[in-house]
Length: 359
Ligand code: NAD
Ligand code: MG
Image (cartoon, rainbow, N blue to C red):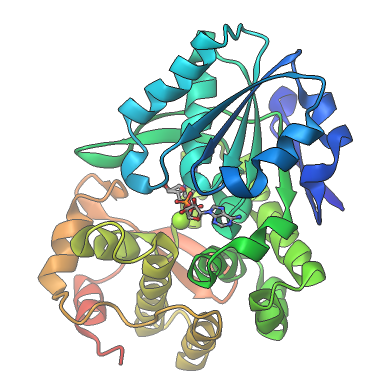
């Protein structure tokens, strides 16, 4: 098992990464506030892993809330189901909410923990690769509003993140690849050595080799923890985590959520960011192609949807939250492993990037 710490002063917390951690009661016990525990999960994950987690918590007074599965349920109405479950079971301020599931469950359970009785203890048990390397770390929680994704939420840090790599055995391959898009992102934005390591191990990761998974998750969480530790509330640096996301969000929005997985849209968006960085002369064509090749080997799409015109991208990017004072800020690369957040680029280069032929 690997342990690392997210350093946030008195709100610091450990991340445990290893095989079979769901069956290790001693990892959970020190992070429980009292006897009451509320497990929040969903219809897909519950039949797979709920029993195992309940066994590790035996002796506790356990309530379980099983939510419907899907991003469309990341809503106010579903959040109420969590509060219903907690209140019906008479959980008080000393309860501990445990999120067992992917990013959707984690974001909702975390927001519920931030709100219930003005804040209760919270443990993340992420079960998708994306949630293990991204959403469970950093304290962003929330739900969607009909007018925008993740528009209602709170910064709320967990007491611990417990990452059991064994659960990835049941994850669909497409979801695994989507998680790899964020893993590769960490290499591209801040860790050139990790990028090299990924080039050697991407097949092992797709084959779910435990040692490779543990190392990739550990290095990804370490990168995210470093960035979040330096800028918890995204006043600056934290935005580098959005490499590929401005282009990617345009793809997700235009295609309709669900058509493209988030990680898939991020992969195609990352290719566009690589393309733009190379057009600016900040990275070489060879470096651009190195990034693209790795994304391909991870099973990810590297060509934006053919039906999307430059105007479509601009329309969606204009409403992106990274537009500040009317200037579009993008995360681009000054080298492989070195991201910058900048609005300092000629408009023609953006236009050329949107018109480029990616096939
Ligand atoms: P998800 O939670 O929808 O999970 C994907 C699918 O996999 C779901 O059908 C889920 O039920 C299923 N699943 C989960 N674990 C499984 C397992 N072990 N075996 C089989 N199936 C399993 O999607 P996700 O990619 O994990 O998370 C996406 C969400 O995360 C989005 O809502 C996004 O906004 C959010 N997010 C939040 C942050 C943050 O910082 N809070 C960061 C990135 C993404
Ligand atoms: Mg993302």
